[in-house]
Image (cartoon, rainbow, N blue to C red; front, side):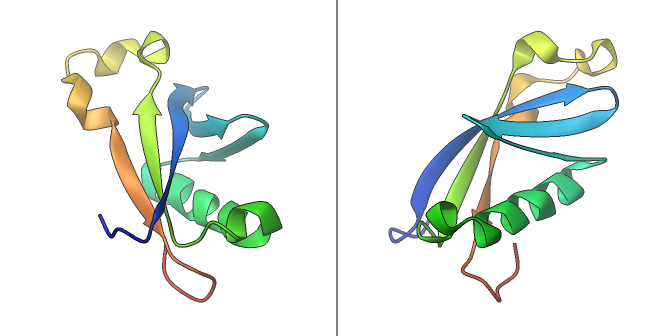
Length: 92
């Protein structure tokens, strides 16, 4: 991780066949994890308070209580990960 990145933590969950990431009053979703990551980047770049924190590292921590039954066979570390979001004009 680059030392100049602000760290933000979001709760990751899976509901009604959609991935969700939430922190306070901010919630984004996606059909799959790449779409969710793109949604996170759009929200960070379009929200002035969040854009001021860029570049940022978003740590996604899975809400294990919401783990779908078909995924319970996998180990917990598969669902906790980080996404780096660069300033506007960069890639998510």
